[in-house]
Length: 640
Image (cartoon, rainbow, N blue to C red; front, side):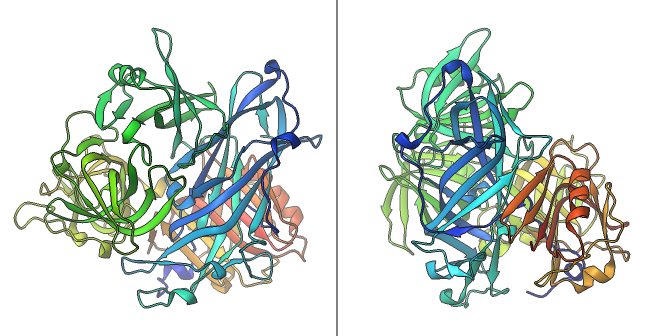
């Protein structure tokens, strides 16, 4: 890939705290080796979730074998009852609750997560609408002389020190959230730098140095999702809620991941066995379901009230991988009633875990029940079009690689929220036109837009049209600069507009990712001295000497102008969610900080003239005039 002028000045970000540790295979201790549980009055619920920052991966399926919490006195509590198979590429725009176990009350100062790459499925974009699955021997441990992450040396243990001023406090009888963020882009180095459709699969390598952050704050930009069998339903004047026996990431088994209480509101939308409901009607439909019906709820966790409230709920056969064979992916083309769905996650009936498939041909029809996330009303198979994120439920009629097929003519179809990125062109009469860069994470080259519009009006990537509500503020959009939307693709044959937005993403506020990476052994003084507690400054010469510098907006390498004075990094004023960390590669320690000033103070001590910086990564709003990045997340990786 040819570097843009910007990439010679700024680089894309990850965030969190870094640690990497190789070692032999490990598993959770047997139940008998765990400390005996306290009395019920001495416990609280640990609501632990996993999420991911974006990377160039179509699939990244690994096993998480352990998540432990540690108190200051050395007491360690295992919170994950069983190995959990996770596709981190699924978690770019959401977080998944992995456990809601009751654990002893107290103050926990660190966390430890063990990831096992045995049997991993890592697939990368080939840049031409296809994928390459990386061979197991080419997934390498960056902290262990690039040895393959294969058994018996397939595990990596990540140690996360929580902020001194913001530990994980578990209170008696309450629910407490700890969010772990696995950053794919920052955790992995893919080689060669340029991958095409002709690149031999056996020449592609991924070197792993995991970057993970831990925070007790809730990231409001991402929905939190919980899945598992339905427990009880409460529908009274003072309590509208239900409980879920947590079974994360399509994992089955009888292991106890705890129970989550899910609050609902009059605006919560439901898809129950393919039928749509809103508000009280949806809760009545849940109450009528058989015991143990699988539920999926997505919403938000409120730190102050310690409650989880769902915006959308799916139940029964509307849940991916429950009851029927299920798949999740992006519609790449449609011919009649046959959809070609790409970047597919398969969850097969009576078979735990996930599979990845580049494409699956799915037949739908008038008998397919259709629902739309976040919307109530009646929908048909005609509502699904090219570019739409879909959940499909039916019978997999062929699972042969390269020719997988599904029959959903008597099944179910959920239209999920879809994210769009492009460069702004113009707007008029409630329609924004963009030069499309990515639709549901896919490059335009992956799509065939034939049939998406009326005669002569099929969607066009270079002039893609987005219908927007009148409440959107379009005044800050600038021609040829990035803009993002969340919503649904218009019904097949109904373009223009080709897309109906429900959310506008303003890159200038929070969605710019910057990464500066230096050649090993790193540099001793990347920041202008003296280091301040309110900002960190990298001068232009230091940026130009870096191995790689890049700026991205969503999936786009943004060709934004850069200031001649270099880059100033400062905390974003008024941010409700922040994550600041220093990663120590050699000592395999990750320090998280409650504030930007705390990180800067620690950095000033650590940079003693011999310790070197390998990488600087941040995310926030970027002011091209001053070259200032106002971060909500920042990690500095040290070679010590």
